[in-house]
Amino acid sequence: GGVVNLAHGAFYALGAYVSVEITKYLGFGAAAAISPVAVALIGIAFERFLLRRFYTADPILSLLVTFALAMVAEQLIRMIWGAAPLAYGMPPAFKGNVTIGGLSLSAYQIFACLFSLAVCLLVWAVLTKTRIGMIVRAATEDSERTRALGINVTRWVTPVFGFGIALAG
Image 1 (tube, helix red, strand yellow):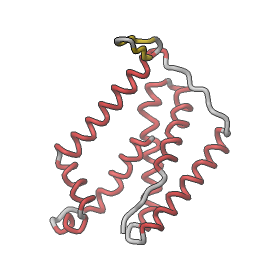
Image 2 (spheres, helix red, strand yellow):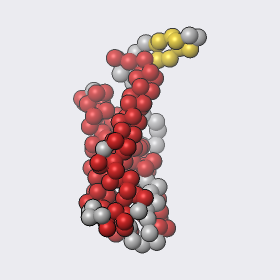
Image 3 (cartoon, helix red, strand yellow):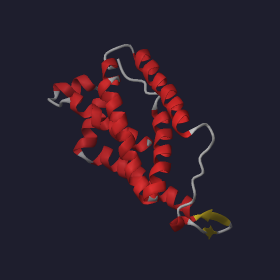
């Protein structure tokens, strides 16, 4: 068995909408810090109370459950925020353009690229250079053999799932 998760897009969208709401009250920085955590907590609850039941079942069942979650999340987003696009203003700290050669980029585009690169490098470093990364890689490659080595794979599923959802959110 295994889990085929089609709900990451729903968590991504939820993260965007939560971020818009938090930005209204606390600003861009707080939204960037809080919304991934909020969406991760929702994802952890989804994993613990629903998805966990399908780990040993046919992978098509987890695909259907996560697809259903994506559909429900889309409808909830429409009910709460409507179907029209939401306006999201540029954070004041990122206004302006930077010209590199003949290419003009907004400060926000440069920030987004550099921040994404930093997150990718951090995830890569954690997965390849730490004991946690070694355990996660081993458990995803061969969970039975990892269990035979005395590692409680089940203990790692929820935090890793939550981290992945935080990245999506």
